[in-house]
Image (cartoon, rainbow, N blue to C red; front, side, top):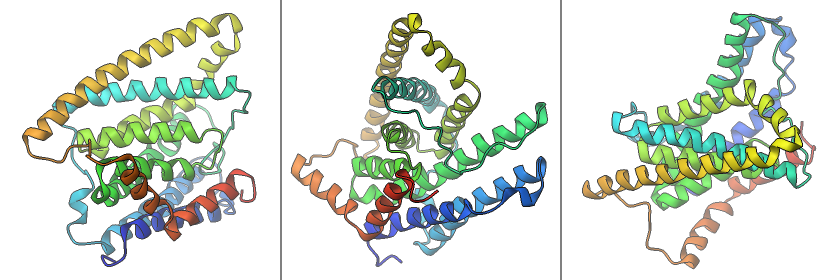
Amino acid sequence: MDKIKKSVLAPGLIALIFILLKISVYIDIDLFTSGQGAFLALILLQIMIFLLPAVLYCKLRSSNFSEKLRLNAIAPDKLPVTVLATFVLLLGTALLKLLISSLGLAQESYNLYSYTVPEGSGILSTLYVVVVFAVIPAITEEFVFRGVMQAEYEEYGILISLVVPSFLFSMLHGSITAFIVYFFAGMVLAFTAYLTKSIFATAIIHIINNVFSIFVEGYVWDIFAKRENVIFVVFVLFSLFLICLIFMFSEAERIIYNLGISNEPSPVEKLSARAWLLRLGEMMISPTYITCTVIFLLSAIGVFR
């Protein structure tokens, strides 16, 4: 596999996951009974769709590939940037969704895994929902995108390793109107993974974001629905977003400065705009990347379920 260009190989993994996701739509979860059986079936499906192909991919790569996956604990000095990135993600995605709504575009109720939450109530049922729809998706997606994909694209430059996996992450969610939301989320998570050298940091951020989307976001939109509150709420959200973003970049500057002292590569590459665009174009015209794009577009317009 080492002889195959990474610009072809890496999107191939995402194309395979895309295909497995589309096949999984036709699996009748009701066959696994309801309640705990359905939840466990969903967990197993997510592991089979994301983790197994990604682990096999890593096994087929070079023997030292696992060292590039950022499977490190969160260093204490990276906790501030992790916390700030969490708020930047939550506030930024809320503002982007509000922008999409204000443009008259429908807010899609899209579920990546195409499954509804099995019926049930109580603490145990809530815990299952958190595990199945927040924790497991966050862990599997972070391993694939901020782990495997980011590691594969790093030889093309830090910026490419942030942008290209974020595009793939956005496409996997199959929504045209929300594409910019997922791309923004992907960039925040990718930059955090670069700064912290830990996908555990991004997994925690991702879990918090998923939990927020499941349990809290509906109440936020109820506030937006009250016209008299919109301007004030947007002002507060945007102000908090800018404050968190400024502090996050301040922490990033400190971390990158320390990386420079350690003689590690800078994320700011000395490339002309033309050279960078040519490099990006090389990534996006590979057959497997085009395959991902075609599946995304067909999914977005409803050809695939």
